[in-house]
Length: 426
Image 1: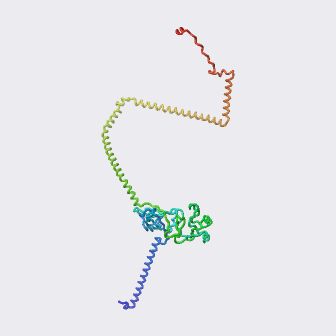
Image 2: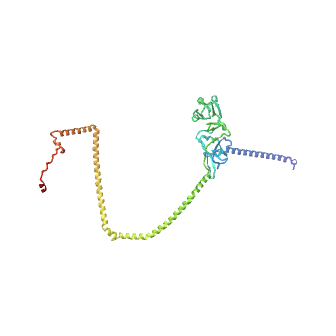
Image 3: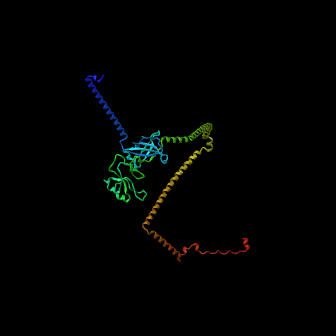
């Protein structure tokens, strides 16, 4: 039915329905667009699409367990992701795999020139590996967001707010082969005369009072300064790489295969030792059964020797036990008496030594009190000796000190001569 055939009331009602449907479709479309935009914004915020990112790169021996899009970790946080993995050219003799990754703000601020490294560690037991960066400990920030500028010393004097401008490079003293650092980076431009004395005419500086939304400079370790940031200008982090779990398992399996023949030979030796032990125990059992009658006979003989009137009692006598006990008692009494006498003797000797010590201490005290006593005693002894010698030489007392050796020797009387006859008779 055509629209002209409808009544005016139906046409009015239909036009109202069409407008309501149009508004509903428009509102649904707007809600759909808003929801899709919110989803994209939330995803971008979650993935850090609106954050500033700093690129880094490193080299590894192999790309096992790594892939583009894997997260980069630091201190347990996900701070970035891997953006590129590629093999090095064939003529590169030092590195094998190039790994590039990005760190989002503010985590790239933890990367400093000293202490920051990229560790490639094992993530699970299936061969997965992860890149983990470490926090810097010293040096300079790897990236800066301050404006860089190359100026002469004359231009540096006319810089606005010169106190906020700092050096963007290390300045070394000339004539030292670049080994002696004269002025480090991040030093304020407050002593341009000293820089002129070092022979520098041009310097690279940055404005610490102004910060941009993107990186402006990246530190170059070999040049010792901040270079202008570009797409191909990235900071290099040294890598500490650990082998994957699969490689470790292969090495372990290889070691097990090498050790397996030795293990088998060892088990064979153990089996032989066990069989020999079984044979030895069986032989010992048979030997024990054979020696049981002999042991029984020995027990019977010993019982007979211990019985009254046996051979042992006949050979040793009946009073031997009592005599031996009496001898032991007398010996014990003698030892006790000797011990008592020895104790008394030691006590007397100790008292004598104490008395001797008192005498020597008194003599020492007398000698210490009178320092001339020894010289007086020596002089008295010398004078006494002189007196005795004088008495020996005095005519009246000389005979009293005469010794037997000083008496003159007398010759024996000559023998009486006899005749041969008398000698024979005698």
